[in-house]
Image (cartoon, rainbow, N blue to C red; front, top):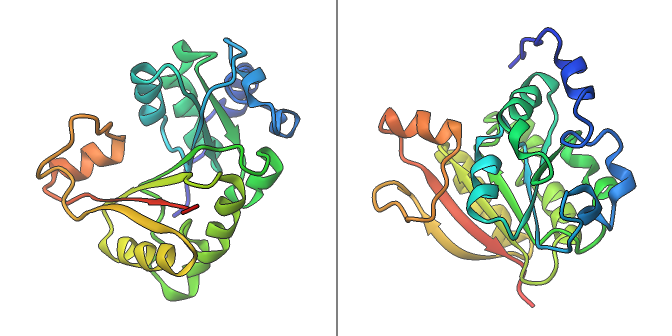
Amino acid sequence: MRLRKKPGATDKINAHPTIVIPQPEQYRGRWEEAFSDQTKKPLHVEFGTGKGQFLRDMSDIYPDVHYIGVELYESVLVTALEKNINHEGKVAFILGNVADAKDYFKEGEIDRIYLNFMDPWPKNRHAKRRLTHANFLEIYKQLLPKDGEIHLKTDNEGLFEFSLQSFSENGFQLKTVSVNLHRDEPEDNVRTEYEEKFSSKGQPIFRTEAYIPQ
């Protein structure tokens, strides 16, 4: 899908270097320095962060966690920035590629990874682009500590089945599996923009938590 460029997106992003970090490599291994409290806290990262609602709401509910969103597309990230202007120092973003995550984060530095409504890349020839492909899982395994978790949500059943199998084949264990999250929605579930959109149309939401066993 070709994304439409947003006029002025680059200038707006560049104007907020404490929210969208211009050189994320400089914080590798010391991300607490990028946040206003300068305090060591659990680090949770959303890969493919989208429009920023999820991290905004999570940072309000769980202030004892540092949140970072990684997004490839500037035209999407500028919306996340706009939604988090008032969350400066609580949420940070990286304009970058998930494939380069080891440049941004040190081994074992991320306590939890979120994969919310990622592009399903439904054609088999594009399977390596899915963020739960074995190649990406190997990156996550290096960035997570033992017992570190990946929380995944999607509306795409094929991607969900692919992801469950990929987790199981690549050293992760499944903690929870839901094939209709909103049927008995947990009180602590924080919805993304896409989640609200798909749920309003009656589309079931699939969710799992995977972790690296000790």
